[in-house]
Image (cartoon, rainbow, N blue to C red; front, side):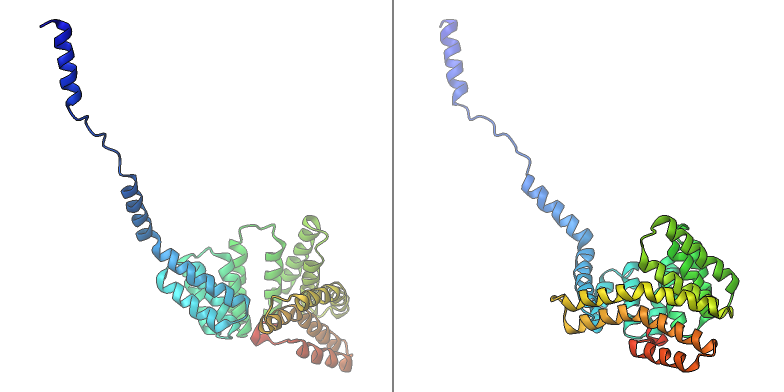
Length: 297
């Protein structure tokens, strides 16, 4: 047999053997396995996120009891999510369940003792309960831990808390003046914030017995805020996506700022001896929704 024949037979014999199968990686199985791991790891977040989505929508529509129910559902799945307790506290506050709101804010600051916004929010609840000492202590904590000390808002918050408590009034005046100075440097066109800060300064001056200066500030604050108040009401009125309930809640929010300013003006006028005029302003403030228990103060 020649070498050519031997090679030919060998080739034929080799070609008759089945070729080995290439083993392919089971990508489909791997994908299913990975998806299962991810689902097992994150399914609580997914379910909790679903319930919180419903809670937020209910809150925006002023359906407080539903918002509370959905938030409680979310917390059953993620009981350590502090943002959910912050949200639930705000729902409790809308329902005037102030002790429950305090409990939720307290849970948050116990978990994170440097959470400034939780202290600021809890201070507002304490003020609503007329527990001004506790409110002022929380306002100081909020100020201490606030992430940006150049934020004029935090200076104003502390000043107003001091004025409500009737304590540290000279410091309060310095704080609100710092808020106004920061605002004018950072955003001189922000008339809304300027109106709020002038209202605070007016109230501090009133508590200091400087009534003429207080009257000038409060009247400027009202002049600035009144046209914005009307524009906001017009926008709310024209928003066809709002339910009657949601629209009423938004009206209450924008009316609340004006109610506080008008109430302050009434107090200042009474202190100046213009009693009849002051009493009329105090009554108008009540009609606009001034009510410390409901957070309008």
